View 1 (cartoon, one colour):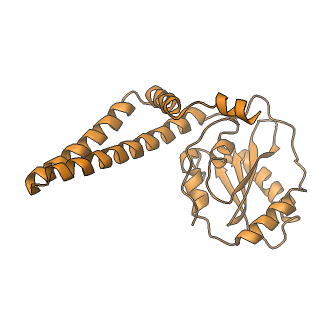
View 2: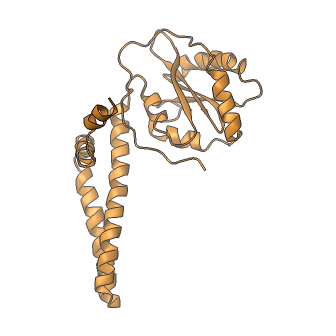
Length: 226
């Protein structure tokens, strides 16, 4: 069974081609930017080598640097492209949150209303974070209600509420991971695991949202909280 699943996974080259197509759809100038950034890096280092009489050494270093710069630019453009694809979809914030690196646990859609506004539950070193999707005037009451409900289970643990969206006072989808990473580290690893265990008993207070949520969205991995 595991072998058949591995065979279904696309190879690394195929994955890169798929991501390149996504970048091209989101930004037709994306791949030329990747190419020019790599070539420009190589050219600069080769010129330095010519001036300093270390041509062959600089050529070797330049190729490595060009590949590195090209991959970094490629990754950044891929991230922006996937954010643009997810933007406006139900559960987009959940897909972004599930791409976070480190000791995070994400429970999508613990609450939803008739307008398909959502609240997601995140547990990590800051404590508990409730992340909403929807207009601020609609999700504020949802967040307050979920905050009270969660507080009964995790007494004494810091609970943050974050509104994800494009409105005033909300965190844009593309900055959501970074926003959570900047929250203070209030818990150590054993305490984080204890909070996770407590919250497993918390029932979902919601009907299922209409339409598919982007469960399989492959989000680029964000920075790991140190």
